[in-house]
Image (cartoon, rainbow over all chains, first blue to last red):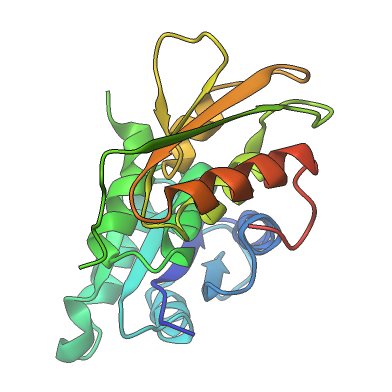
Length: 130
Length: 100
């Protein structure tokens, strides 16, 4: 089994994050590692940098990790999480500019074929292109 | 490299029997299967003006092929014949779970 790019889903809502991860697993399969986090540590809506770091490490692959986010803070906190990773991992994590559900499914589909991180990001972002 | 394309193009036609047409799950299965081949593979709804890259999940989802429509497949490259056969089989067998 060759390595595949890992997928991380970061939503303000734990239900959305979990539901998106379920869709990816059911539609694409289990060959791609998927981790998710949503909500703040108090159980409310929000995102948490430590939880995002945990999710990135859980989905870790030598080929890298693509992060899919929902609204504003999810993106800035994900970027902060990437900066706080150990230096060797930082360059192998990208935050995709893509809708969270569709982007996650498409990124995982691309990743399942053994594509590079750049290819996975490009496919997720196809949806945002004009 | 595996690139031994000799210019020969293999084609296939298959009727889309899936109840609701080419929606998200079949599109993912088709794309995943297509990616297992080296060949360049294109598909279209029969008679459509443009061919679509079978390895692009976004484009396959967007093709909106309806139930009962005929899907045309063409492929070129070293394993093109096997690729066409596999994709025809996937579509004809209604995208069984575990395929792709």
